[in-house]
Amino acid sequence: MKRILIVEDDMVSRKFLSKFLSKYGECDLVVDGLEAIDAYLLAVNDGLPYHLICLDVMMPKIDGIKVLKTIRDLEKQNGLTEKQQCKIIITTVLGDTQIVQSAFDYGCNAYASKPINIEKMTEVLHKIGFVDNID
Image (cartoon, rainbow, N blue to C red; front, top):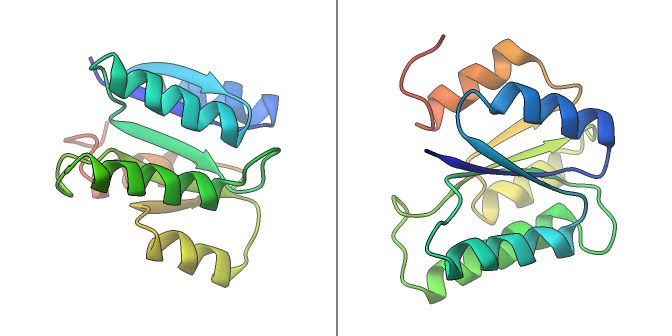
């Protein structure tokens, strides 16, 4: 069973993503960047790392870009190859190309703008190799 972490401070977006992604794996939900890093570390320490993280950019405590950078740094420290790293999709309502570019610079696999479109999100999951075929 694939493990998915949804990092989203907006309850409606969190529930929507959880409902949509639950057909692809077991979803854990957190509401801010600090909880995201804690959940990531806990999963790794338990030997049950996440396969996919949906990460909102604008969040309380620690923003999504810093969370992304922290997770990628931790993966490098643990000697994970790119193939072993979890897939990270950045989600945001911001159309700021600089934020999107910095997310890719730090190693996100894809970007999804909100409101999330199910068809586009399914395509993204397929494109990054998280799902094998489009339903």
